Length: 195
Image (cartoon, rainbow, N blue to C red; front, side, top):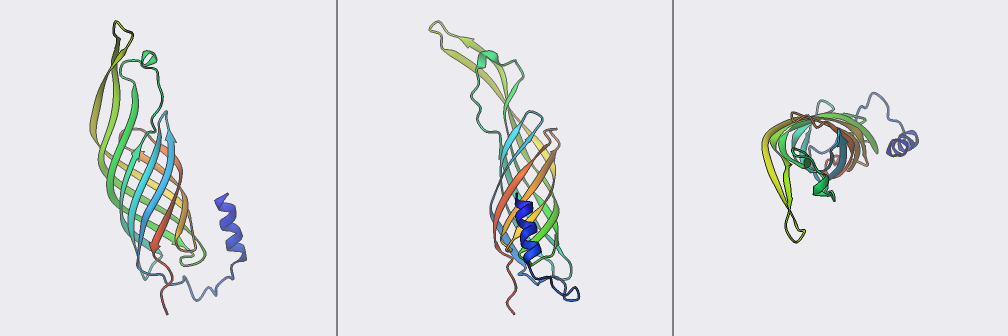
């Protein structure tokens, strides 16, 4: 749906003289709200990310850094149906650089493709056992595993009016839980440069 909206904006926008090139934008922009949901092989994540980007003058690239957090949503489960070693929850907390190439930068609909590289801490909650007491109460035993995780995060999408990004992000981490899904963010800064 967002691709259709971006295409309508692109088609109705006056096309610039190709000799003029991209519209100059301010150097710094900050994603202060970026949410997404991704799903992979049996795991779904709710993702939150904040990042800062610097728009380079002589090229259509931006470079910056990102701080990302993701967690599986809480599932209602029956511990009597779980098997030993089963993972019920995962989280990650990562920091790393990112860069994007921006097509039609500064226009009302500007498309981008990029890549982030991150490293940080991952956790998984592993079910060990459960026992039933004399009154029928169930005691669960868990093991919280913590480990180093790194990931590549390719992404692409559209930036509308220089401040609203909608895209698709893939997360390819070292722990094997490859996920893909939509994301959206609101950015401050990065608007048209004052003449």
